[in-house]
Image (tube, rainbow, N blue to C red; front, side):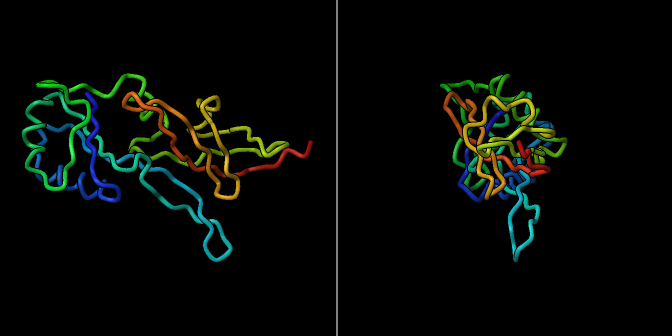
Length: 172
């Protein structure tokens, strides 16, 4: 089952490293921080950079959530395991899990989606993780090479910024 751990913004990878060091593999199948590729302009040229996709969250996969919770209590700077209700944990919803899996690769990294810019600055997704989520795009920022996707995450609406690479312009 997939679980989400809330941590301090900017401390996601550090928290994941501490969890990997302090929690035995028998309680933890995997601990990761989903990342995204983005293009940023430095000194006049576009460069690929990697950023945290879900700021303030670290993900864990475990089949032993109660034992894992006891081990996580020993990890410093950990805020809380989301979805805790009395004595039980709730796994990440199947749709949320499928979304995170479908936009990321084996390393849980969301690569750039290739797009063609059409009239009125609308985009057509040619390839990449946005291909199946065109209907969820709520904003496109061509200047920053990003598309904002709205999704439900932990029973709340969340907007995720995902990187785009412009591969063509439609001159209609």
